Image 1 (cartoon, rainbow, N blue to C red):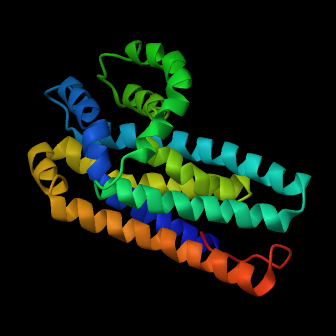
Image 2: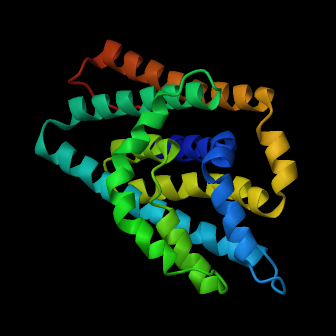
Length: 236
């Protein structure tokens, strides 16, 4: 069920503020410092995030297409089971990471280091960020910054088995991150104090874990009832 996936990743993006502060807080701080003093900040931050979300959607379309190709190349149902299982497992790991209980998700960031080394030099050409179009372009590059949170959600886009659904899933995730990134950019001190609260981190992590556990339970139930050859309607 795509609807469940969209709700899940939207909340993952929203609850991932505990990660965004540490990962992107300093970047947002640099961006904020470059906004001309006589200009309002919010159009620039909205442009940053619009470019970033567009890049997330593009990445979602790519992995969704890859998932679709995998489903077409072999018996679709077993592959769907495995992808749903992987997606739900990643949500559990992500919840543990957000709660501060296990940092395994950070290892995923190494996977995108090579791509980021190629893109990073282009960011310097957009500095100083003194216009909204420059902010939009810089945000689009920023969207490819290696991030364990993003890569974890990309697994759900992969499991969708569709380029369109993969793009939609990543766009929903990006929209979920929007309030956090805007708050960090516009209200840095207040946002930092709230997001760094241990109770907030634990609550966010446990809620994300619940989505993963629910998905794992659905996979297990489907397998128990139908086996690997049965129909697969597992929401992730």
